Amino acid sequence: MGTPQLRLIEAAVQCRVRRFAPAEFEGQPGLRAQNDILDRGRNAALALLQHYTGYIQYTVFVCGIFYERFAVNGMVSQRIGTGTGFGNEGDYIADVRNMTAIAPVWDAAQNLAYLQYQMELAHMAGNTAEHGRLSALLATAEGRYDFAVPAYLNSVYPDITTTPFRDWFLQNWASVP
Image (cartoon, rainbow, N blue to C red; front, side, top):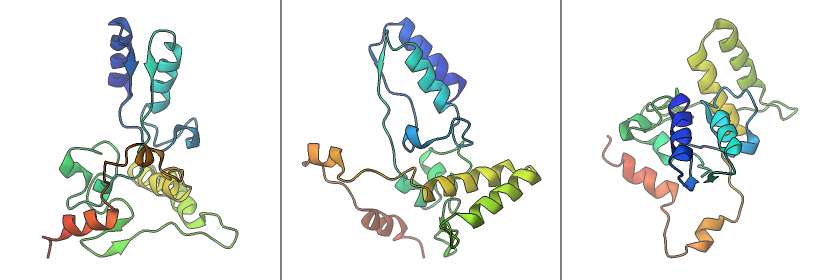
């Protein structure tokens, strides 16, 4: 993401590439704020693609929550998520090995009060890593990674069988005592 992605888009336009898909889009772009801490250059990539819309077609593949966030040794063991701030085992919602979790909590008014309070504390303390981690949890609780039902790609390609999270999770952790 960031500057390398922008240079790649410019090179693709210059070489007359007809179609382009930007890297690592997680969550629906319409649900992100303009100055989102989780952006990591995605809005700039979309703006540049929109600028060149007469020269190149583009699409954005929207990912939900990668199963690998819950993998043994985390996403970094698969060489993904290294710049996210929550790529290691246990960084995102559940620390399976230690059997602990941080779950978003709503107050009586259905606000994510605890997470917002913790984010403010992290921001005031200048703890950008913690602020980013909590931002990801808040985005999850607010539905950024939710998909519309029905899952249209699954109906278009019925011959491709997906692996349910439970099955993947049990197989992934089977060898860990």
